[in-house]
Length: 150
Ligand SMILES: [Zn+2]
View 1 (cartoon, protein in one colour):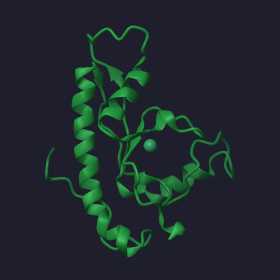
View 2 (cartoon, helix red, strand yellow):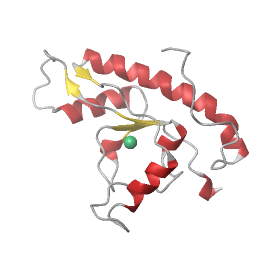
View 3 (cartoon, protein in one colour):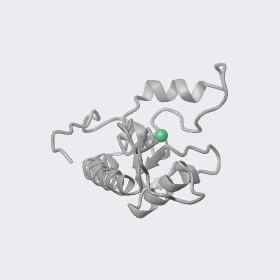
View 4 (tube, protein in one colour):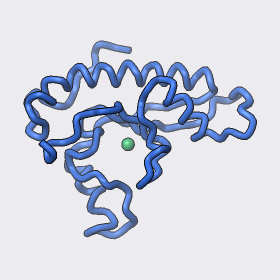
């Protein structure tokens, strides 16, 4: 964990209500601590999480949301702009791979093993999502959902 991390989200971001905005720095710290724990737990199980992709701009989220709706392609997300925890730096997409000599997990594949690791650090795993299976995605449980609901 480095304290050099600087959130790209400015205080008072328009998409969150003031109460949620005030909570954001603490939540981002909590998420990064859990992500660091996840990296450690995964390494003990022979999984490398690569360089997790945390921030996704609202514009990029909007583009992904339009895919399969108003743009070609298949639907990849149900979250519109500001409705994904990636806009608040409270989620990460990991780049999963086995380390060269992972421990023997029997029948468990990479994603299943990763899901078990995610549950031990108390993050929410995208592999459990019912609508769109997203096994490389983790997020902070209970993150304050975007502005449109406030
Ligand atoms: Zn994600």
